[in-house]
Amino acid sequence: MIIATTETIAGRRIARTLGLVRGSAIRGRHLGKDLVAHLRNAVGGEIPEYTKMMSESREQALDRMIEEARELGADAVVGLRFATSSMMAGAAEILVYGTAVVTEADS
Image (cartoon, rainbow, N blue to C red; front, side):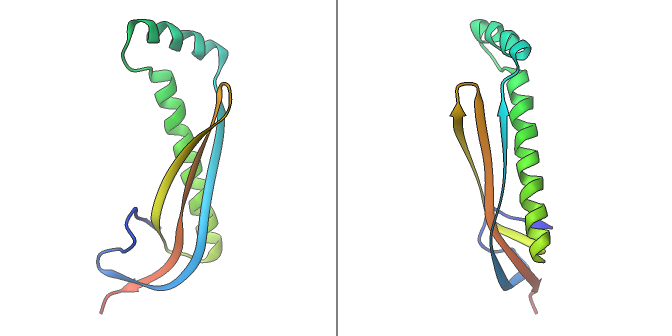
């Protein structure tokens, strides 16, 4: 599966557009990790507990979007975008979306 943030893929042409595909993940903070994060925040610098949590959430959302694209018969997703929103105190959603397409090699 080719994933691109661009609307085109070098060396390929879009033969068919299948439509919007998306994936999301909602994660809440963990009390134990939250305590460590607050302590790290007091002294400054990266908070690796949150970095890891957000990275895992992005990967999960991407996997869900790719699965939806495969179910439609796509071999690529173009125009990929990420969005993040706060659901409630301590919980955030990662949304990834793009356009599922079928491509073929340029002649």
